[in-house]
Length: 305
Image (cartoon, helix red, strand yellow):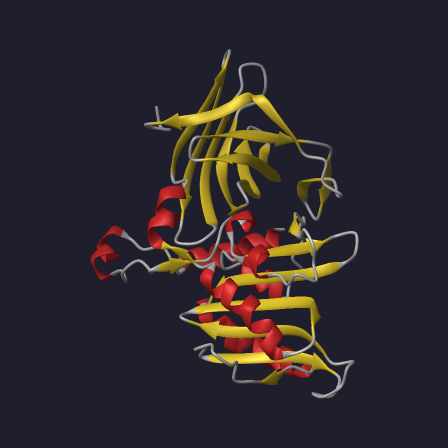
């Protein structure tokens, strides 16, 4: 998690600027990666051969060096849809093309057997596809498509595609799922949130960048426990905010994984069994997070009072 947090921090640098640089900052993008899997166009694009598909909530654990890691460290998202019991469906990944991440992955893709392709009816800048079997074979399978379009890297993985033509509706749905600026700004969670219960005073001061990355200044002023404050760098997808909280207290410093659930109307904290791994106090896997409605963080004007 520490390495992932460092990668997130590096990506945040790309979207941050000092006050002196604000006048030179580039204009906000017209579109953004999705933040919620349930609001994309993918389910509607799945074929009739997959009856009653649904979003499959998957607790991703990105491993360094993988496509998933590179996407999430840039504020991207991955979503799986289909029929979980039958193991049939599609996983789609969206990521900003920061640091030309698409180009940086080509060597790995070609090593794995992906080849460059021109997708029919799609105005992509570049695309690679992983197939198995001859073009005219009944055993042919299209496993994965990576494409670069309008500054975004999109990856479509599927278990049911035989031809590129069959994949195009799914690819187009993934492109159509990029979020307009107005939608992104309407759901942006930047702001102060405070939970006050008895003598406990807890704050979340959130800064959401132009993607699913979050920087949060956090304070835990407990009435009967040791107080702490620090910063979290993390991600916000599917209305779950999570990351690593670096904080200081009387006896030193500590890193701890945290979870919150909610939206700009407020958040609740997640609790569950913990373990220490690589010096970070983390939730045990598989996750057993329970949401504590007692400590509800509500929007406030100022977290510095």
